[in-house]
Image (tube, rainbow, N blue to C red; front, side, top):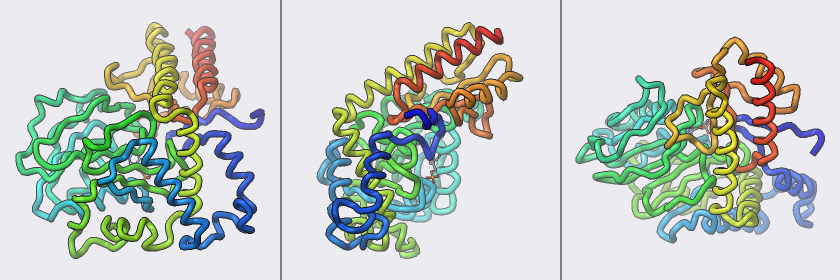
Length: 362
Ligand code: PMP
C-alpha cells in the first residue's frame, strides 16, 4: 500500500501485508470471542485452537515427522545456544561446531560454558565467505552433536546441503531461513529459529526436536530450558507468547495458501537471482564477497567499490521508501534482507535504484 515502505531489515523484518491486515481485523475481537488474542487465557479453548492450528500448519509446511516435537518457546535463538547443551549433553561431553559466520561463533562461545565444544572448521580468517567441503571435515568421533548455522544472517552464507554427523545429531540454527524452502527435517536432531525474520514477530522461538533425544536435561537445567517440560505441556508449561504464536499461525496459513514451501522457494530464488545478478553485472561497482555456490537466498550483503558513497546510497534509497539497507555494524557495507514476505516488486525496485545510482555515480 501507499504508506508502507519496502523494509529490508534483517529482523524484526517485514511481514506479509495480508497477514497484518488479517491480524488488524481480528485485533479488537477475535472471531466473536469478545476479546483480543492478547487478552485470552492461554488455557482457554480459543487459544488452544490457535496454538494447535499453528503447530499443525507448521507440521504440514515442513512435513515434520511424527517422531519430532514442535515447541513454541521464548528467549530468542540466543537462549537455545545454552539450552541445547543443557538438554543434550553433560559438562564433559564434546560437541562439534562448524562456524560459517558470527552466529555460529556465538553459539560456539555460549556452549563453552556448558560442555566442550570444538570448532572443526571456521571461516573467520577469510571473513566468512564460504562453507567447506564436508568430506574433509575432521569430526570428533565422540561428539554428541554437530552444530551449524544454516543461514548466517550477517555474512549471507547459506548451507545448500548438510553435513552428516559422524556421531550424534545434526543441529541447525535456522533463524534466518526458517520456512524459506523445503527442509528434510529427518536429517536433523534439532532445528531452532527465532520467529522474527520469516514467520512472525520477535518473542517466539521455535524448536523442532526428535522426541527420543528429549528427557536428558541436566539437574541444573532451568525449567524454562527443559525441552521435556515444554513437550509434556504442549508449550503451555507457563504463559507462552500468545500473540506472537497467533501471528506465526497466520503466517503459516499464508505460506500454505501460497502453495507450500516448494512455491515459496521458487519465489525466493527468483528474487535472490535478480539481486545477485544486478551486483555481479555491475562491473565491480557493487560487490558481494560470498562464494556463489553458498550465497544466501535471504540476506544479501554487498559493498560499493567507492565505499565513500555508501552513506549516500542508503540515504537516497530511504528517500525512495527502501529502508534498513545498512549492513550489520560488524561488517559495514550494505545488506538487503529479502525474506519470504519481501515482494518481488521490492527487489525490482531496489535493483532499478541500484542501476540508476550506478549510472549517476560511476
Ligand atoms: N541466530 C541467527 C542466525 C540470527 O540471525 C539471530 C538474530 N539475528 C540469532 C541467532 C539470535 O536470535 P535472537 O535475537 O532471537 O536471540
